[in-house]
Length: 107
Length: 121
Image (cartoon, rainbow over all chains, first blue to last red; front, side, top):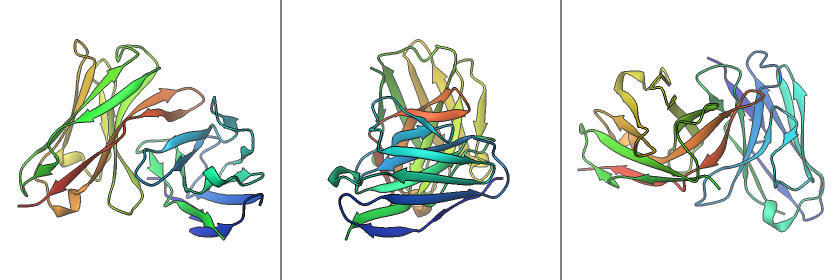
């Protein structure tokens, strides 16, 4: 099975900051990597699919990059509504696997 | 707009079977190009994919749960269901159903709101 890791596990940032979250797969997953945002008490929301494709309706300050084993989610200018936990997820093979999450909170 | 809604008991006794149903509205579960998945989240923890079903009835289960999981589909009701047998306290979690879209890989583009299932006597 493919294992996913994320770093950092948490970070503190201010509104307007550029934020970068890293996800690593235990083997190459090509570009089959998705990113989700989850707020407390809510279901996860798809942000990015296929490593760099922005889901419809998601603000353009979110972007994704990477291929193979290393991927990045970037928030270009952090907004108050972006404080949440972010998960990566591989869809290269089953079982589908999520990363452990990165919590972004207010500095 | 596709919507998914989980339903089922919020409390299950140890050793019994957890049963949940996901009702899909705003789209047909029989549409090609989609799997229908169950995902759970232990309190304060990350996300664990349980398995999926295609409208034809073909399934794939996470090997970590395979011996206890059954996912079924009822296309006439536009629903799919999860059964997890021999539950323990470790199965206490929020259970989500989600649409698993096939497009440049697969991704979960629509989710239910989630339902908390507590395993306790």
